[in-house]
Image 1 (cartoon, one colour):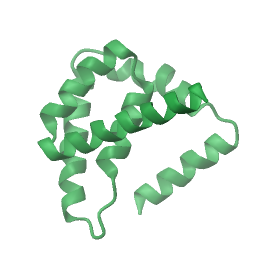
Image 2 (image 1 turned 30 degrees about the vertical axis):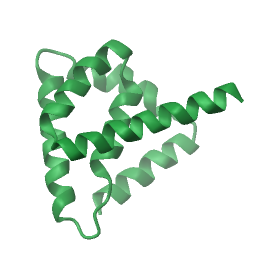
Image 3 (image 1 turned 90 degrees about the vertical axis):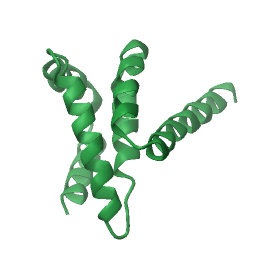
Length: 115
């Protein structure tokens, strides 16, 4: 499946030292940030992923993974706006899963930093 191919390709790049996050920020993000591209992209992607998750057997956490990836490349100011668009495009339950995963990750990182 495409997600298995994509994820293994990304993992290979990361293991090979390719700065994936840097490329996303410098090569992809400037295109998405032009005009209304980012709002459209986030809403369309989340609506599509949530719909696909509902029919997938067994379901995979596509929306959560996508949301965490978007959060990882966003500045705090960008995340304020982007999370609002994500919330608008998802069911309440699905948005709570995404936000809960991000909050749990942040708490885990804070705990590691204070150890």
